[in-house]
Structure formats: structure tokens, C-alpha cells
Length: 207
Ligand SMILES: N[C@@H](CCC(=O)N[C@@H](CS)C(=O)NCC(=O)O)C(=O)O
Image (cartoon, rainbow, N blue to C red; front, side, top):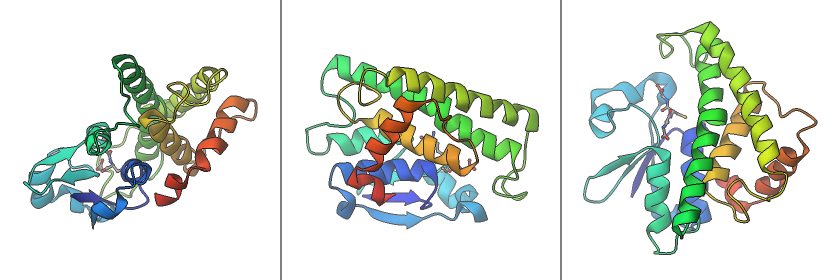
């Protein structure tokens, strides 16, 4: 399988972590798409992923799957033993709920802040910016951090006892928030402890 990505960016990092969790990194061929140079907006790449985003997964048959949650579902089920996306209906429901909360409230809010309230990737890429809306996204990240701090008061991971896709989304969101200057408030002790716990997983080094 081919993974189109730009290494070091948060969404591609989610897939590198998922692959490492499943011991499948060696099975992937990583193809660099130079996002800062606009390579993700070329007709060739848009033909593969009309969203014009990385990562995208291309199978041997030519089928392309984009969106990190969809790619993670694919990767997680390759061995028939899903560990990141849940095995029971209840686990799957909770993981997808918490994943989406992490995506909307941490990762998307943080990247929107970056793209709209800061110079982002520069004028060639940031062709539309709404600074006021961008600044609002910073508040959303902080609200997301407060929510997850509470959610983690009585469980080790976002969806319960086990590490899951929800934690992958959240850790990339938290790391990116820090990169853009939005730090976890000191009194969010549960979120900080979770971050340290997750950071110790070998898969985090694969980003
Ligand atoms: N919802 C998408 C988000 C992908 C995404 O926004 N990727 C960023 C890189 S971290 C990107 O390609 N940005 C290019 C752009 O928006 O122009 C997913 O889950 O894969």
C-alpha cells in the first residue's frame, strides 16, 4: 500500500502512529507530497484525492482511501484483529464518538487557528484567511482540553481502558496545539498524565 503524506504534519502523523501500533509500517510505501509547495493541489494529486489533503492511502488495485479515520479503519482490520477502532458495537461507538470530539475540538480547531490566525503555510497556500474566526479556534482548543481533562479523570484513555484511534487523534491535536503556542493549562493534571502515558508508546516515535 502507498501512503501519500507530508512527514511531520499532524494528519499524516496519525497514520504513521496507527501503522506502528499495528506493526505494519514496513508494509507501507511512503510517497512525499510537498504540501508547502502546493503539490497537493495539482491535477494529478486531486485525481487521487479530490479533497486535496494528505494522508491518502492507495491500494494495489488503485483504490484510494482518504480521511484518517477511514484509513485507520482499513489498517486496523487488515489482520482481522482490530485494536484501534474497537471490536464490539459499544467499543466502536465510543471510540468514534471520542475520536470525533478530539478531531473537532483539538486537531481541526488547532489547525484552523494555524491556517487562519497565523501566517500558516504562507500566502501561496493560505489563499483565504479569516483572522477573527481563526482566533476563535484557539478558544475551541482550550475548551477541548478542559473537556478531555475531565473525561480522563476516571479512565486511562479517551475511550476507556484501552488506547485507541481517539487517543491517536487527540495526541496529534495536543502536540500540534503546543507547536502553535497553545499549551495544556497547568491545572489539567489528568490530561497531562494521559499525554505522558501516550508519549511513552513506541508508536509515537514513528511520526
Ligand atoms: N480530515 C482530513 C484532514 C487532512 C488534512 O487536513 N491534512 C492536511 C495536512 S495535516 C492537509 O493536507 N492540508 C492541506 C490543505 O488543507 O491545503 C483527514 O482526516 O485526513
